Image (cartoon, rainbow, N blue to C red; front, top):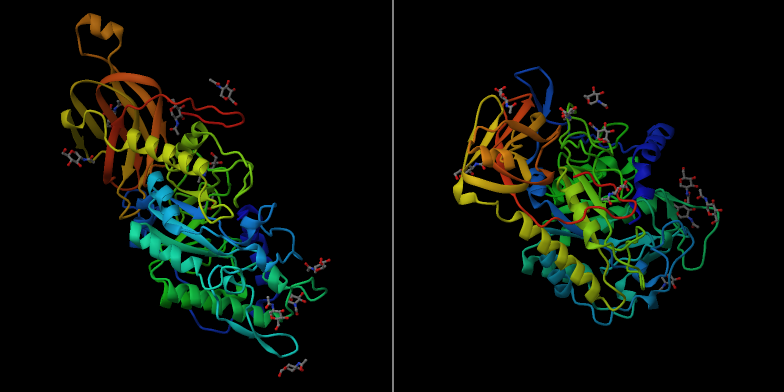
Length: 506
Ligand SMILES: *[C@@H]1O[C@H](CO)[C@@H](O)[C@H](O)[C@H]1NC(C)=O
Ligand SMILES: *[C@@H]1O[C@H](CO)[C@@H](O)[C@H](O)[C@H]1NC(C)=O
Ligand SMILES: *[C@@H]1O[C@H](CO)[C@@H](O)[C@H](O)[C@H]1NC(C)=O
Ligand SMILES: *[C@@H]1O[C@H](CO)[C@@H](O)[C@H](O)[C@H]1NC(C)=O
Ligand SMILES: *[C@@H]1O[C@H](CO)[C@@H](O)[C@H](O)[C@H]1NC(C)=O
Ligand SMILES: *[C@@H]1O[C@H](CO)[C@@H](O)[C@H](O)[C@H]1NC(C)=O
Ligand SMILES: *[C@@H]1O[C@H](CO)[C@@H](O)[C@H](O)[C@H]1NC(C)=O
Ligand SMILES: *[C@@H]1O[C@H](CO)[C@@H](O)[C@H](O)[C@H]1NC(C)=O
Ligand SMILES: *[C@@H]1O[C@H](CO)[C@@H](O)[C@H](O)[C@H]1NC(C)=O
Ligand SMILES: CC(=O)N[C@H]1CO[C@H](CO)[C@@H](O)[C@@H]1O
């Protein structure tokens, strides 16, 4: 992926194209989807409304992004920034390829969806694309840089992956980079007409546009209903109307990563999700489900567009399998979970099958370790059978316990069906300390244990230390009376949060 490189095109690059050559925009009369929102009955502000697909996607909370393609066979991390590199087709030779084996790691992690890179920047397709096109000398040829010309001709990674995902009950999505294709000598959606390297085929810009449309049509027609579609680095402004129509017709339920042009505000679909703006796996502490900018979003934006935090398992921002590339520690990955899912951002963790087509044992073990932590910490609230709750119209929510209960964190979830409405929260607890116990009185004062702004789908607040409480109260400010999805308290092993250079504020 290296999507930071591509994604910087979303604003600057696309804006440049649109203003430099407005007449090249499609003549289709396709309407750009408009955002849906309502007006706050309290302060008149905008409350963006989600689609059912966006809510269902946020419910998945975390998934994986699978990098398995020609880049797997390079010592560098894919073909990014090496425009003349067209790796030899004989390199792609996964002798032990088994996508069910991938699913073992995905389900051990607890991921609810998986998005597969079907074409990355080298231009190689891991499905046997049947697309034909004209070269600049008007000869019609086949797109012959695919798995069908590789040593494993006859296989279709996209089809195998789709079947495995369906078998294991994991949502499946596809990534296809539209802005770079070394095989066709394309960077930033434009065919370079000055020189051609070995293995590159000569085409026109118009032909490139039709190839992309034809290949996306294959991917969006032949592999079922997709959970997520990735536009890494955005898309060419000239293709906007075409993609709007294609998505509406072929994949109306998919959520689209990078669906919106930050500058114009145009989106390909209402089902957009936005990039959070980094590849570290950390969302800003204040992070809304709304807004289309590549950061913490905007609470008053009319666009509902949750953020995605994509990040790697391997160190050094390495997305494709790297020989002997170290893995990030379990402590760092637990921090990543809290800095993404715990801050209302969808975590999309990289998976990098090796050159044999399998997930290495050391990688599999780390996914399971993270999955085990998440389920042991968060599957069951502490002392749930002895907890009562009540919510009130003043935006408050109270948990009372039949007897003193030790907790070290709280998980807050809004029901966002009618938009994200809470604008700030404070968590208070009646903490039993040594004095309280020795006094023999439960008349203990409220202490603020956490506070912040955005909740959205989920906010996890970890306290400085475990405390014993008899009551917990959440107070909020809001633009409409909050509807709580859940409020739960947990007690988990204390995991050291710090790793070198990793900022983590519990
Ligand atoms: C290819 O076809 C186009 C349109 O028919 C024509 O303008 C062009 O001269 C042809 N190119 C070659 C090399 O024959
Ligand atoms: C792909 O097709 C072009 C044009 O026919 C040809 O020059 C090239 O050798 C082919 N590549 C492979 C791998 O078959
Ligand atoms: C086209 O390719 C040549 C040779 O690789 C390179 O020097 C040039 O910068 C490229 N042009 C563009 C617009 O990328
Ligand atoms: C494609 O379009 C760009 C921008 O207009 C232009 O610089 C480039 O030369 C075109 N490529 C070809 C192959 O015509
Ligand atoms: C947030 O969105 C609103 C409505 O579009 C806009 O007026 C405001 O400037 C935005 N705020 C920021 C910080 O971009
Ligand atoms: C959290 O509470 C502290 C102390 O009362 C206050 O200074 C801070 O502004 C609050 N932060 C938010 C986001 O409300
Ligand atoms: C929470 O808000 C309610 C209503 O505004 C207020 O009465 C109460 O004192 C607040 N609770 C705390 C612990 O500050
Ligand atoms: C409150 O408690 C009831 C009864 O245990 C439970 O069904 C409900 O889900 C809880 N509400 C929230 C928001 O957690
Ligand atoms: C955690 O990291 C910060 C910043 O890197 C550092 O200042 C702090 O001392 C570390 N805390 C612990 C307990 O290691
Ligand atoms: C909309 C919003 O509040 N964005 C914030 C997200 O978090 C970053 C860093 O914490 C802030 O700079 C943004 O203002």
